Image (cartoon, rainbow, N blue to C red; front, side, top):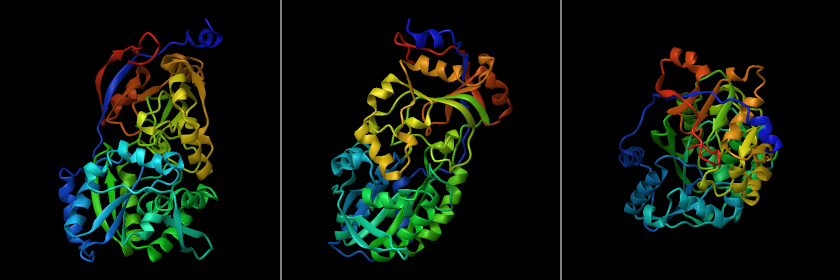
Amino acid sequence: MDSISKILDPMPLPRMYRVRHRIEGPSISDVPGEVRKQLASGKALAKIKRGQSIAITVGSRGIVNQPLVVKTLVEELRKAGAEPFLIPAMGSHGGATAEGQIEILRDLGFTEEYTGAPIRASMETVQIGQTPSGLPVYIDRYAHEADGIILVNRVKVHTSFTGEIESGLIKMSVIGLGKQKGAEICHELGFEQMEPRLLEISRTIIDKASILFGLAMLENGLHETAEIHVVAREEIEKKELELQKRAKKLLARVPFKELEALIIDRIGKEISGAGLDPNVVGRYHTGLGSGGPSVTRISILDITEASHGNGCGLGIGDFTTRRAFEKFDFAASYPNSLTSNVTVSSKIPLVMKNDRQAIQAAIKTCLLWDKTRARLVRIRDTLSLEEFEVSETLMMEVEQNPNLEVLEGPYDFRFDEKGNLV
């Protein structure tokens, strides 16, 4: 027996319960119908002329229904006589290469066959001006050459800072359209300066680039489409302030104040820009966020296949598995940290040989004398909070929370012959 196993094997594991988390929020049943309704009510397509080329921004997040939204938008643009195309708008993701970004889009469901529009990918940018403070402003070359640009994105709480403007159409215009170069400029002074930089650069882009309008989406805590808004070019900043407030209210978090251990089955760039959403789990890689539970130890068990080896977020955890470590691709992960100037996300936590040891290590180091009292939660990922597992030590809190319902338990963790969860 190796020395690590000698320390961890005697560590008892709690019995677990599966619970349902009641998360309420609005939901749109007819997504294509709502897109068409919004386009018609705002007369967004009225100024489009036959034959015009229109660039549609598409990011790297797993935004629910976004391929369907974009497909519907493409259909309406073609009815208006336009020639739409998609551009990867995701800063330095995909290893900061055009090929890597195309691959991400395809994995998310954005293909020409499905959406009806080709993908034009390049990391080349064009400087279209500078801000009043002297910052250069860049946008994607293909977008610059198009007759019009439509910004498509979800408005949500940012994973790295708190402000009135966080993640949405404005961020898409600056970091999405700006590619790796635009992302680097915006991140240069750290996340303390992120909100004013986003606003300053986006105002120049909206003023000088051929932005037609924005299409903003909100999601509820069940990762369902809650709202869709077509936003006029001149209303983008004002509308996003309003939508950001609603996004904060819709966000679902792990519903406990304090935990000794949190087990996260998987992280990935399609789940969150940080691999996992710090707002959900209460641990922030920049020190600038707030909210969520206080967690002593976090174990991250795996990286999704759709993340293509981008393990950003692994460093937010304390422990991981050899399985996740072997998926970690330096070339896919490090460009994000080198561009954003946030090094914590791409660090490697302590690597355990399997899931059992990663869970035992979190309990072993949780700073309780009596480890059997450790309060532990296991979630699939930070987008999946409608069901999760809790230890017996949390049952009193579960019973006192009207939004939690026990589905199964108690039972022991179930591992295969390799010590991984089944």
